[in-house]
Length: 199
Image 1 (cartoon, one colour):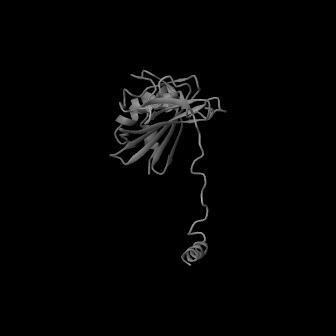
Image 2 (spheres, rainbow, N blue to C red):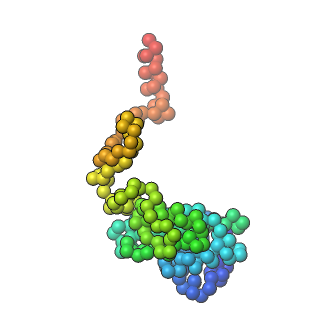
Image 3 (cartoon, rainbow, N blue to C red):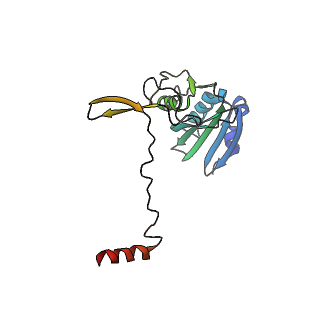
């Protein structure tokens, strides 16, 4: 069980003011903070004895197109020594820039580039902020909820032509002919069918 009182008392007054909400759930600290305090909070979480969240597990985002603060950027941390986890969340507008935490966690480089590529979230002070998963010259951000599912080109290597080719995005509905009858749902139907085949 995480002691939230000891966690709050470990925060400097300026950091405590930056906390919008703090909860405990399943031995996780769930923090919602103002974006400007991100680097300071992450540094505190990593270095403070008794917490030592020195492993960055992931950075991801959730898109809420109807909200004024469209994106929630979510950071997951692990403390191996304390056997605790922490989730830090910030909410930003589409035009806001987030401070990069690569100065605290070098591995954030990859995660931040993913968010830039797939959601369009920009990070200040990032050492190499460019696309990482989509093709050169790709327009748009595929994990935004308003991203269209057609009208784009896809890239693939053609084995026959022995080169990379561009072609219109094809969203086929393959593997949609499911047999919804399962032998576990109606074993008699399958048993009788097998018996007829043998005769």
